[in-house]
Image (cartoon, rainbow, N blue to C red; front, side, top):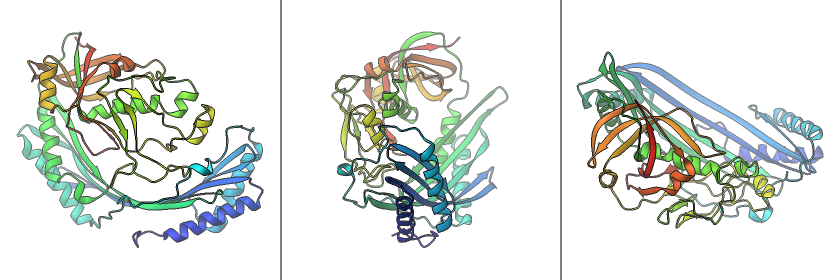
Amino acid sequence: MASDAFTYQQEQLMAIASDALDHAAGAGASAAELDVHEGFGQTVSVRRDEVETIEYNRDKGMGVTVYIGKCRGHASTSDLTQEAVRTTVDAAMSIARLTASDEYAALADPALLATSFPDFDLYHPWGLSVEDAVAIARDCERAAFAADSRINNSEGASVSVQQAQFVYANSHGFMAGYPSTRHYLSCSVTAGKGDNMQRDSWWTMARAQEDLDSPESVGTTAGQRAARRLDARQVGTTKVPVIFESSVASGLLGHFVAAISGGSLYRKQSFLLDSLNTRVFPEFVRIDELPHLKRGLASGAFDNEGVATSSRAVVDNGVVNGYFLGSYAARKLGMQSTGNAGGAHNLLMRPTGETFEELLKKMGRGLLVTDLLGHGTNMVTGDYSRGAAGFWVEDGALAFPVQEVTVAGNLKQMFASIVAVADDVLKRTSRQTGSILIESMTVAGS
């Protein structure tokens, strides 16, 4: 049941969608699909105990794609009146008439469309007043300052509450949608003085208020992380084992997703071309896609084309079992959609059993990466080079903080040389993994 705070009820969004599809058919479209959506929310930021920003957002819109045979046109609008919707459909038709034919352009296969729509518990409105949001942000920031006496400045604490709803429909007769919520709390502070200053942050995000970390926990973690980075220094260039802390390790999972996603594959712009049914990771690595996870940040019964989603082991025993494909990419590759139009759903790299402390001991000596800078990743070759900060590890324990170094390797080799995945999984994103230990990388420093 959607909130009364929405401008439209689900039935109204469905009526708008139905009218747009009817208009497209009447205008000569052989097929059409659309997404009509609405969202609103509030974000409050506090800095040094003073209110810095209070922001309200409310938006709505529709994007429609029409097909005239194999010619496709797309148009969008933020006006959901009948006249504007129909004008937008007409604009998409005009574009389709001028577009070259594409043999792969079509709606999703009707046989793959979702027919069951379970409730994944994604909608938890948080009726947070501005005054209460300010109080939460202040509690968070104060906890950061209390975490360590060396915390002396703040970039602020923010609280955001968001609600959204949508309906997807196409001319195969598919029409469905649902409301969802997403709430967020963050804090960023600075420790030290003069030439010895360090900044760090922490954040939490969830569908429901009760699943967020407490403001005190977020603030304390941000403060402790900033303070422990003081007196950081470079290390000499060397080749050593590297641990990607869980807060940054999800980025490696993101690179894997990008490499086996349809667009990269059919354009041949991936270092993992033709990797289906081949071993990319060590045998102990398993990566699950869990689209039906309760309160999951990327849960859903269907993808952006209405194709039904299903749970699967994308990687099992280190072997890639499937790609991430929408209908267009699947046709280009001579395959079938995997229900991933719009991206992956709730990925989890399964831990191998070690705690974070045990992972440090397993590494012995090397670099723990807690922060990454820059975008030095070549998805065609897999070459990887990122600015990094973190901690030098000796004898399985943190020795001193490190800054202004670069970690470099090749993603294909990095994936193959994963030694272990710790159990410190963060649940604040849709790509979840614990800290990852990689056997050897180049650390470039002084």
